[in-house]
Image: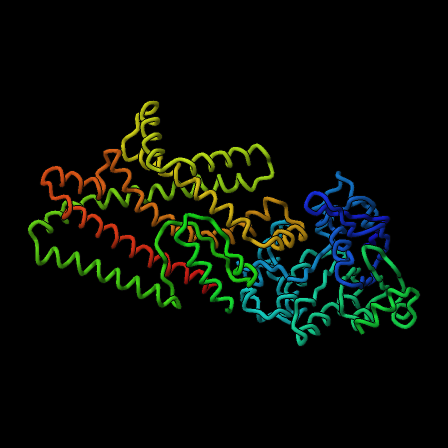
Length: 247
Length: 286
């Protein structure tokens, strides 16, 4: 399957042409094949920027990102190929509002993988079944609840048969009663051995599903460990104080 | 104030000015964004009672006045009406073809101004600045005679081309604003799925843009109907031209212009209601 290796990654933003903000500072991490790695940390700590660098939605300033040994930051790399293989789920779902749920899922397989309509529809229906929404195929995204929309977004990503999935705060825009339905789908994926890198504030999910937890603060990776190590025995004072605030 | 009220206030404020604005409040609400760019009339919608009733008063008033004049004072009003309304086909022909031309030119201008290529940006930017900075009547006469010197075009065709070029610039700005009104997340989602820039544009951005810009194009259509009266300067027999010819024969200037004004007013009011209904339907279908 897939292995993601990030080495010494930096990302600077220039604000108003003068001030430089170091959003990510010399971050290194590895997600092994089939592993679930969760990035936690206060808002503005560079978690999302780090995640979005993996499929190059953000252009890193320096450093290296390798997916199955292929260097993402190399200008010669075919990014479309990488993005086909690494799915992404966004905080704000980003479903295509002008398309039905079914067409949302089939668009990329048909246009990018050149799948025919019948085949794509069949695939989409099986994915909708998997996320428990096969009766919503004909609906428009705006007729669905937030939790349902996010499940469709996950199905849309899975339709490209990715080897790894990135989740950027997938439950942060959801009402509390809808968080579980999305986390359940993600938990299933984790159990099936999908390689996953997530940014989330759901500590329950992190405890249950993560192989590794990374704590970030002010653009730096402060601490990496198993859920047990991070939650029961954090080494860093900053990790401890963050967890005290959030738990 | 709740968001709806703010929306309405924003809209009412901006709609009479010839400005371009994307309704930011609507964007945040994830409602379909509306772009207003018009000197056209207020477009009545359900829920805007005051606008709708002022529309009704004006419309009924205009119809009643026109009918009353024709029925109770057929001399000279019936004759004037019959003469002037003969210009309506020309007015509509110019308006419809010119709006189609303007949409085509505007689409290219709009695409040009969001293009990543510098020089394409530059060309469409200069076109828009140039056209917006010169009065429509001046442009129209200029293009008409400039075209006439190099090409032998029939008056109607020349007028349509001239109006298309003039309105194409405004249309270009509408298209640009429409494309930019689509949330960045849409492009990101398509990109993350491995779609190319052109695939993203054709299958994700463009269909949503059409929906956003349709009402604004409707507004431009109404503006175009009114501004098409300028082609009467170019010896085209539209409503206004017919009226002026009638005046030169009879010297009934006040009576004739009253009828001309009423005809334009009624057409414009009907069209604005149609555009309003179109917009309602678009919003309902989410």
